[in-house]
Every structure is written in structure tokens, then in C-alpha cells.
Image 1 (cartoon, helix red, strand yellow):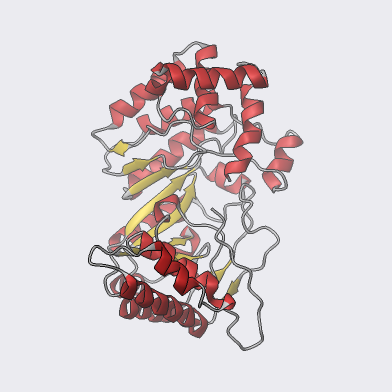
Image 2 (cartoon, rainbow, N blue to C red):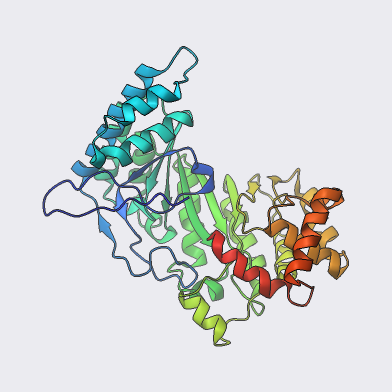
Length: 391
């Protein structure tokens, strides 16, 4: 879902409510509050989101105006709701007709948040913790004053940034209301991190992760299967698992690599400098990765359509063997069966291997294979184009 609203900067003046382009899938029902624009690093070769855009801080006063506007419309919506918390659609339409066109984006944001239960807030864009601690604490305090019932406030952050924040400041940020941080670990292999210009080392990833946990925040670490390519796949799996074993994050979220046109990694791939993994390669890599996760109590999440295996989810260590069995079952399948599952998963017919036992779902996947002439030999090439749409 594209949540970007166009803004026009006016020197010294508030330019209106803003929301950035992305948020984690787990924040689908969160209120999005944009406190910075774009990414201060913006050099990762695999990321298409902020290329060509400059990073900037939004003035704290402007962010507070965003928060106050949301609060105004939330109060309006609460006043329209019945005892069950629901609002008749016609009453929403009547209010919408009175909203100034410049405030329509904030009304829509408030309505979306209201409909989702108003339990969580996500701070945008790519690295909110780059703010001075005093400013971030000020904004968190303002959010708490306006929305005291909120259960969770979360944000993206870079390991390089977190590693440089004094522990006492990070604890103060937690006490002010920041409950969870999402960090793009991507890999624990220094070879991979250097090649994709991640701007952080394995040591920094581990240091930042431990610091977040020590501050009392929940931690989501993102891992990108396939990022090492064929040549570094094993190192990518083993070193990433080792980093996570040291951190013991609350969540490990899988985001399989896809390579859209126009990013640096696409050029590396097309010119032969990067040897992309197939789905089978990634299945073997994820198997090696999961097998190497030991001594931690993290929850693995596979909550993105880019992932071939939605069912590689569960709590460690209890669900580890079940996840391993899923991967081994897929790898033992006949190539044609693997092909049908790949197509069915990418087309949205399958969410787990057992869905192939449904005659209706299987027939749909087989029909797509037939219509597009997809075979085990060309399935990865064909599906890589489809996956670009999901980024």
C-alpha cells in the first residue's frame, strides 16, 4: 500500500501532514507519524525505496502539528461512534465532506487508525533514532499526551546509529514510550554487508541489538535470504545465525531478496557481478540458517509475500524442528512439484505446502504454469519479474 502524500516545503512554514512510503507489515494498522524524510544512509545496493531522494529532518514543531491534527480528527471520530466503537458509514461521509482538501490526508490517516483499533504508532522514515535524543523524547511525550491509551510505539533504526547512542539516552527514549525497534540486519556476514554497502558491520549489528534489548525495548531483526548470492550463501546463513544467537531478538523477520530494475544490485546482477540464488538455493540457505539458530527464544516471522515459505514461522526452540521439516520436504520434492508450489505461492494460491493437496488450488497453479509455459527450467526467471511488483 502506497502511503506517500505529496508535500511542498515552504521556508519556515508548516507544509501539511506527511506520511512516508513504507512501514513494516506488522505495523499495518499503526498510525504513521513521519519525523524524518527518507534515509540518511541510502547506499544499500538492494534497496530501491529512497534512491534519488535527500534525507532531511522535519522540524519538531511540524511533527507536533501532524500529531495534533490527527488528535483532532480522532476526537471527532470517537464522538461519532456508538457504544461498540463503530460508526455508520453515512456519518463518516458527512464529516469527510466538511474536511478541507489540505487536511484530507490526515483525516484519512485518522480514519484508518481508528478502524484498526488505535493501539500502535509507527515513527517514519528509515532511521528515526538519528534524531537528537532530547527531540525524540519530546515527540514521544507529545504522542503519549495526545494518545495516552496507545499500547506500542515503534520505529525503524540503523545498527550504526543505535551503536553510537549512549545507553542512558536509549533507556530514556524507552521510558518516554518507544517500545519496539525494527533493524535491518539483513546479514551477519561482513563479506555480504560490505558488498551490498549496508554501512554496518557484524560487530555493530550485535552491539546495537544487545543495547536495544538491554534498554528494555522489543527488537525485530530483519534477515534477507539470498542477499549473499550463490557464492556467499553459506557464509550468509551461518554468520547471520551467529549474530542473532548473540543478540537473541524478540523477532526474526524474513524478507527474501528481490531485485527490481534500477537499483545498484540489479546492475551487478545483469553484468554478472552478482550470481542470484534460485528459490531452491534460498530454501537450502534458510534450512542452514534455521538449523544454526541455537540458544535463543526468538519468534521467527515470515510475514511478506516475497517469502516462498509463509509457514516458516514459530517460536524458538519449540517450533524449530517443524520449520526444518517443511524446508526438507520442499527440497525433497520432484522438480515439477517444486515448480507448481513456487507458482502457486507467488500467485497467492498457496500459503503452505499442504495447500497443494487442495484440488482447486492446485488446478489454479497448474493452469498458470500451462498458460505462461512455466517449467522447472524457467520458473525462477519468470517469477523474478512477478516478485518485483511486491517490493
